[in-house]
Picture 1 (cartoon, rainbow, N blue to C red):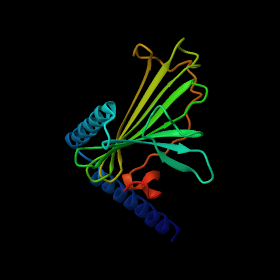
Picture 2: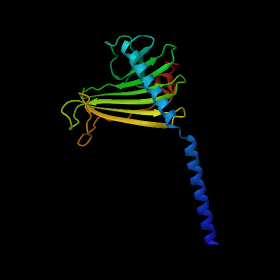
Picture 3: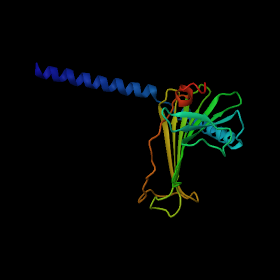
Picture 4: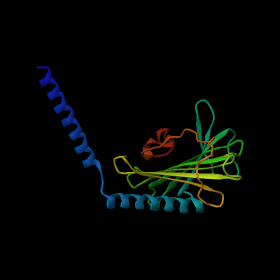
Length: 207
């Protein structure tokens, strides 16, 4: 009887394992699909960055997250005149059809020792295609000047991560080995998988 129970348990475990493996295969995408999704995401980044460079309203809207109780969000029309106690600059970028392309958060560094950017990039359905984290900072202990790191996380339509890329380089864009480097400025951040989940939309400031 004990042996029979053990055999049944073994069969059950193997069945569950095979079922999970089968599900994993169903969820996986082909290399060509993956390449297409990454290409699309990179094109969205390039388009958003191009629009951001022009600073053209209404395709680029800039907001300040102001430290208060509760937290306040203020639209910034003049980037030479920011509200007091601003803790985060937020860039919201739209395409020519007024569809959101990107929601980018840039925390304010009071010391000036670091500059972090957290970018969420969206497709036409408002779903994230790629998250980009950039950090440039001093005090790395492995280079004399600024050390820069960049992470790209790519997603499919069901928010499954399909790829991740990481780069570490110096001020002249030469690759750097992370051995001996310290990363004092890797702060917590949020990834917004849909534009509707971003704070400005949830607060009713944007749609």
